[in-house]
Length: 154
Image 1: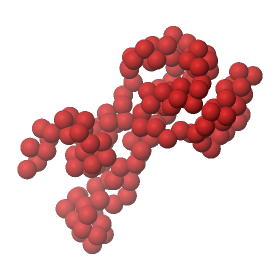
Image 2 (image 1 turned 120 degrees about the vertical axis):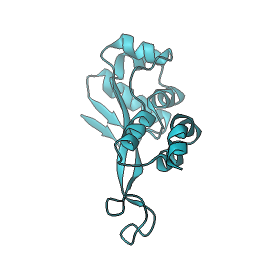
Image 3 (image 1 turned 90 degrees about the horizontal axis):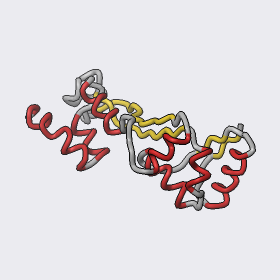
Image 4 (image 1 turned 45 degrees about the vertical axis):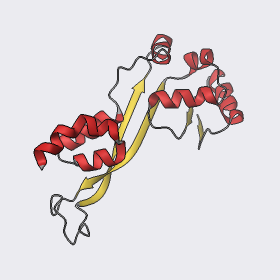
């Protein structure tokens, strides 16, 4: 098993590919916002698509969002310094590619897994975070998806 702290240059990407080709399990980090961006980042680092098809098997992308203060339920109190938030939780998107065909499908633009925004909206619906925080982290795409909830809360 080879763990790479960060793959950020073509040489490191090449070494990761070589290790994978010789049967090693390679785990590495990239700074990207979603699964498609992770694969595109590897392509930008000169990893040929035909090699990715045979080597990549899973991608996990994660971020942190603030959680609603359990003491005041988001109203603001001394515990959360009046912010309404206390702590953070992970939002993520993960895909496991069962075979080469699924990797090719992804490279052709298909998406069949829940996105990180889907996970954030689920956490919002569960009361772990709120629409304001989801929009702060995910921007306009989130605003469009949760806009009707904001109107109901006003």
